[in-house]
Length: 282
Ligand code: NDP
Image (cartoon, rainbow, N blue to C red; front, side, top):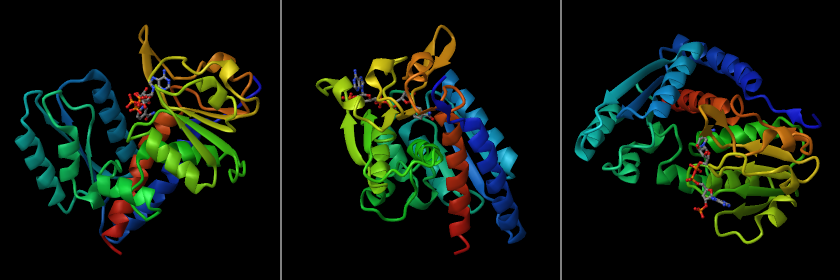
């Protein structure tokens, strides 16, 4: 294997140890960081994500609650629950696990979370702050991906970065973060003409598409940093958007799936919850 592995588990373990120390310091001042996760319905993948978030809270000494609501929950019931958490001083971070059942309006629900407790960074106020270079809560997945890119030690200034995917929760904030690092950023999407011509120029390539093994070795510049955000289930196995086995022979650094960006995403959620709790003392 030519590429160095960017191991999300190793990085997360180190970061979670640091977070746990800060949590202990905050507890000594009388504040226990608290995360509330709202889970509506029975989506099996969501159940796993929510369980892992609870484990992360336990590892770092945070208080966590999971509020399980039935599939038939109404928009009003969901929003009332969010408002109750907005007003709960023991809760510093609120996360509504997505996707919500089809009859519910995700954007409307997320808008009800007070921006200070929006530890997912999905509220338009936090997204707007990121775009304007202001301090706000940064979405966990791109924040974690950037942390992994930074740990290569490569000077990002002036580098070509290509983000494949333009969702509000991954692609767009990822592109803004790379722009802040002074990369020259290209965002690709389903209407991009000649995708490979763009990806082959990338010193930093982020794949957030949702298609198994979509990025193949011939699309990657030798020595590139390749960040695989994708989580796809194929024959009961979780695989990324990058054809890992072949791309690792070309790239300089690569993230695995599982054990890559996904793990770091939860660690950034813990980080955001810690920071939200710290702000209550500021
Ligand atoms: P979305 O479905 O919201 O966005 C996918 C993006 O990929 C869209 O912008 C779409 O373009 C683009 N796309 C689709 N087909 C192509 C194509 N043929 N060529 C180029 N671009 C294409 O997904 P998300 O951003 O929410 O998630 C992306 C992946 O990351 C998924 O696998 C998801 O499960 C995973 N994920 C992982 C997380 C983690 O913690 N590791 C967290 C969040 C997501 P267009 O806009 O034109 O439709």
